[in-house]
Image 1 (cartoon, rainbow, N blue to C red):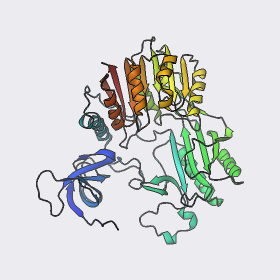
Image 2 (cartoon, rainbow, N blue to C red):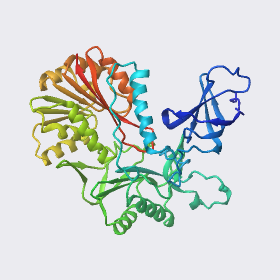
Image 3 (cartoon, helix red, strand yellow):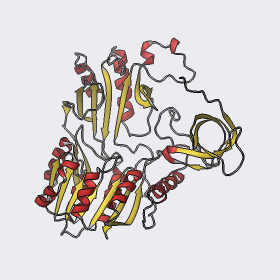
Image 4 (cartoon, one colour):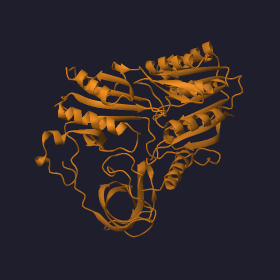
Length: 476
């Protein structure tokens, strides 16, 4: 049965506050509602507290509504003009109209809500969030997708476009896995990111290299990865959907046009998904890696390496984690979800021994190379699924941890991992999280033995709703 179409417009609604997932909220009454209490909550994208707007209701749920702005009657005094030409269509940087100080306030509130209001955790006062010195061009890695069927903008006539004009290289739009917004200029990554993307797109179009169609699994040009460092090194990875004699001429053209690209790779990905974790990365020219420096340490970054995407903020984040670890040189430290061993090596000078565990073998290979390169001999690294590697037998073999640093993916820790942590009973846990909701859930599981003694949010991604948070837990 067809879904019933919603035809509700709400006039003259005042936006009250910032809400979760990058939206704002207001309270409204629908036709037929008894005007009692605060009314229904409506979540609205791209709105700023204080805006007076007309809202088109898109979804009607039992406890809330979702809508979009049809018209801004009176903009909020706090509303800023978006700085990106792609704002409102591109799914990123949706908080551009919101002053940065209000973004930080909203992220601070998000941490409080997840840990206290929803998670019901007993925690000390949350320290003021650490803001980012850079709010534009702060990312060191971006992934762009090719599409033979780009997102058609308002005012464009698809029938009037030539096939080459329907091609796009940029970001996926919202919930449309097969639609890519063609990006002209992105404010997330410093030069030469934009110039490289524009050159590759124009070269592909001029040489009739077909852009990928994800629905039909056809076309040549698939994805493009650009990685940069603070001192200007650039790694470029071009991903093709199948072997072709056209690949080498394109790579040579890129090499000539951009001598600043110090590491140029390509990948032949014939799978039905864009993940490159299981793909061979083939070095075409230059060095096999780029290197980031931090406090005298150098970290090798290969095509598959994980490294925090906002390098200056990563330094602040790691410094907080080290401070919370409170090491004096005598402790055994376990660094769970260690990635390329960045935090492990960052704290190693103040530890007796550091054990790093990570799922991705290539990341562990990089971690070992980094440790040797930095002259660090008190770090050991192990690859495998955390719940399979971190066992009571592993701890018996490698030593009981005095301190554990955990930095899991957004989903948080597997219950088996939490169980082993409780059995190991380190005196202190430093929990670094990119998702305060899963962090709150995991801390609740640890609550029988641990109390939270410090909380420090860090903003890694300005103009987005995402927030990083560090909690210090101590054995009761």
